[in-house]
Length: 324
Ligand code: TRP
Image (cartoon, rainbow, N blue to C red):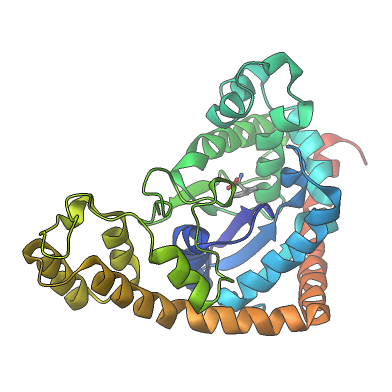
């Protein structure tokens, strides 16, 4: 099996956009690759954050990932800062990363609009830490969204430069673009995100989900129940695509166009289908939240197994650099 690495930041409350866009794929990939999944807290501290919150968030994200189906028997789940080799290797790789390349990163430019010279070195070097995450385990495959393609290109460039100087130690990692799933927020205007408050959290109760769906915008043409609508202009209809069986999606599509069903009917059907998927996740999450020591133990075990690989790689790297 090829080795696969991916990371997720412990920022914000996990929501259905995270689940459909990333976590669900990770669960499926566990059976196809030798997977390492990492909660990247050292990346999360490159922007303003609350030191009181990051610990509990990290633990809760781990509970969420387990509740969604990551299985420590099949994959390795751990927290980045528990394996210090990540930062050690990032320093070494920073000597193989060109400043001009880092300065071209879209994400860096977006996060530092206006006052770039006041940006921190940590934020600037973010992609080098990401490269270290991956190559520390010699991972070949990295499932990410579109927004990370540029970071992966830079990772390959860094690896090429490293291997040229010090010998062929690291494979060039390739991205595995996740299928589908750019989930719009409930406002229908922007991508779903906690910071915009347009999200359905994985931990939301069934009533809370309904309270968010009920007032959500649909096709503006449907002012009254009898007005026919266009599902292509309805944000909530796109959610049916994620949660409802294809036959039902077809029925709802037709029902909306002919006004055979109203928006409330459509939302009720969606709510029921969301509940079928989210209900069991929510229950398992509540269960993990009730036993945080078990989650901590799973993370500790993951870190121990990751460390074994990491230490081995670092021996090889220090040797190649002539530091031994
Ligand atoms: N930068 C990634 C993101 O924001 C998270 C990440 C950190 C990552 N290290 C990684 C993803 C290594 C893949 C591989 O989504």
